Length: 448
Ligand code: SF4
Image (cartoon, rainbow, N blue to C red; front, side, top):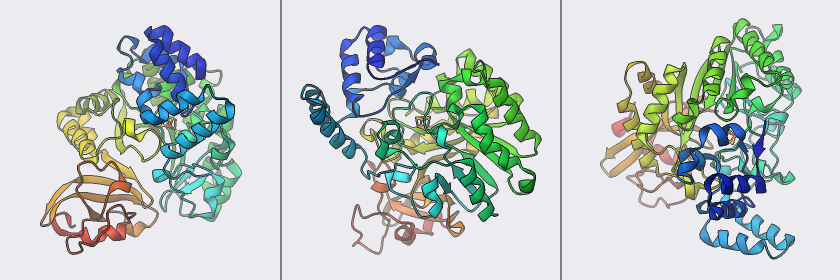
């Protein structure tokens, strides 16, 4: 599959848009952030006549506003000042983009470390009591990169930013130590960049006889339908992949493919539709999720269409995420209040079978505690508050817990929230938020 990166990507932008300024900007920003765009995206998804404002262009292409103007100017100047100066400048800008730089930016909320189980260093993460996330060694890249991806440091190629990854042996050893796990999610990057043979090495142990009564769901997170549908059509091992999926279903397990779909146009090209038909025929459950981000899908109409068209293609809407506090958040980030409006207004527009979107969750935040949904704005005696509910957590006692954070019209994520504490005015803004800090807001209007 042909992909564009670096100077080749900048040349493509100049050729397709006739705008050398956009190519120049792409080249400058590309020193800091990683970009990779597949031929499917350049030829079937992007509307070049509307670049740079086309949402699919914004999804994957560099833009000068992804960097603060001073940082952009610094990198632009450093390109002529030698390798070392450029490296130091880029390193400083990257540090500012990721507020919690880690040697291993393993998928973690807000870029913060999450090494609270020994297995985390092996590319395994227990999401909750029943669910194990596995980050296969060979699946830590993607067919194209979403420019908003919080995993961007691992795509930069610097050895220091490579995430912990797992092999099948570490996965099975963990499963043997934790008989409570029933669901396994293979994630990345995109695990479907792996050859089927490699993917099979992770899936086959989950179907083994000794785990017959234990593993109920095998999930795979992927954006391959949007970025590289040929993975399911013409790739040399495309048929083998579909046979593998059929084996999972035939074993009695539920195979859940969580498709990352950011915009309804990703579902329009015939290759994507053909891929979806083939996937449906395996018996897999298809679900969709994406973050709500500025420039791409911060519009209720876009979400309503995405849900509607997805349902018609057999995809169950699953989650609308809040953009994480890492990378070019200044470019893609939205106030939580806006995300809430987009979600609620989109839900109001769907009817008929697409009403299934009402069972989706949104907007949801990935946090140190687990997955937290913003349920709405509660009008409490001491002022408005975001009503929050814990959807998933490692501590089962937290699941379903309700709490309140002070309403802030410009807060963009978990790290911006402060507790709603009507009886304690000493709460210091910007102190790290924990659920226990939020607990004074429990009950009231939103009490169970
Ligand atoms: S497909 Fe997922 S992991 Fe890959 S770049 Fe996009 S958001 Fe990141």
